[in-house]
Amino acid sequence: MSQDLTEKYRPRTLNDVVGNPKAVSELKAWAESWDKGIPRYRAAILMGSPGIGKTTCAEALANDMGWGLLEMNASDQRTGDAIRSVALRGAYSNTFSDGGDYLNASEGGRKLIILDEADSLFGNADRGALPAIAELIKQTRQPVILIVNDFYALSKKSSVIKTETLQLNFLKPSAVTIIKVLKRICAAEGIDTNDETLKRIAENANGDMRAAVRDLESLTIGRKELVFDDAEYISGRNVRKTMYDLMGSIFRKSDAMGSRAMLRDVDEEPSYVLLWLDENMPYEYTDRGDLVRGYEKLSRADIFLGRVNRRQYYGMWSYATDTMTAGVCTARRTNNISMERFKFPGYMMKLSRSKSIRATKASVCQKLADMLHTSTKRVSMDVIPPLKNMLNNDPELRVGLVKEADLDAEELAFLMDMKVDSKAVKEAIAAANEVPETPAKPTVKKKEITEEPAKPVETTEVKAPSKKQRSLFDF
Figure 1 (cartoon, rainbow, N blue to C red):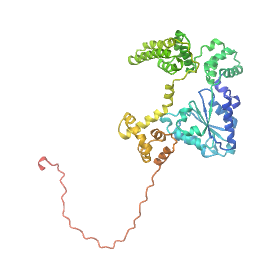
Figure 2 (cartoon, rainbow, N blue to C red):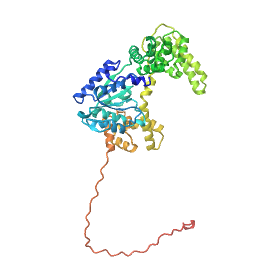
Figure 3 (cartoon, rainbow, N blue to C red):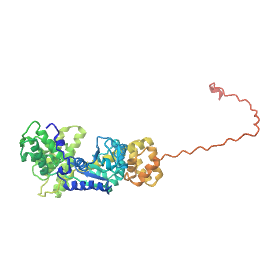
Figure 4 (cartoon, one colour):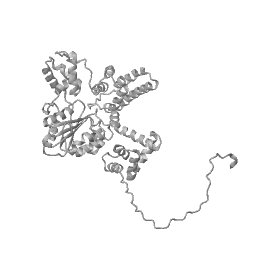
């Protein structure tokens, strides 16, 4: 098995893709609509968690349709200029070859443009990418696929993402589906194993097909036999799965010592576990007494963590972890057990989704601080709040500020609390980028001088002041 199994057994056509039959069929129908001309939606968005086959489906679609492939991922430079020079070039012609030459659709077929990890556009490295993506979606004459893990992080910045794209949701494959794939790989590679071992690998992957195949490969390097004990040594691929188990042990089981021991297997900092407990406790402890006792234990654990931060004495971690596991577990006195799914901490989700906004705000504050000769903190607290109202009511101020502070579309949209593709933002940026025409100098015809020359005027000679330094007595 010299070749990577994930690449060796990657589906080459859509018929080989397992799971998500509805999303796959809709994707194929969208691709076939391009044979009749430019469809209603020129771009499709494949959204879902990592490792479930979104990129594989896009590449398999290009193979089925006989399309060329142009892919830009997170490792490429994805500024606005880069997207316009690479991806947007296909929007103004029928198609182009792999070498960049423009061709007719009848000669070279179509080209599928893939923007992988399109929701990971953060900081100055991807400055101006979102307006270029919105322009690409509206003007492209080639099929475009955007692959995202968090659709909300991308769609909240541009209305075009929501209204002008076909959104396809890819779900995690079940353990049964992953087992079928692992069985097929074992049969092809001549590996002797059993269903219980493959089930252990599939459940550990938690819906990540790529992780399951890589686990299988790591356990069978140089071997042709795989037993259940071998699968016990693989580590968890997805932290959320382990955290779900920990939440179940704390909230829904009366095993205080078991939950305390499970926290050691999670291998996460207590502050991260504290966020999970705080998010899920109101849904799990529906009895008022249980909720009060639970938050008393949780607040005590938070006090210990605060002492760790102040004193840098990490020995108190043990007090915090015991209180937030065994303490919270024993706080429940009733038999009211919730059957809802545990929730990921909303605080962490907000931080992840606001990462791009915080980077834009930092850039705006720095530019305004340089222009106003003040600190970024002063700009954030005292300048930006009134400036937002002023910009919304004064179009000329927008244009002048864009020129003076060198703001781009995303930064101006942040200051105006508007989307980057809104009419007001686009008009201000366009007006600021206009180059004023320089007026032509008037031509003056020389007239012939017929008058008599003026007589010289007698002037009295004025002596130049002395350059000698004056003393105090001269005043």
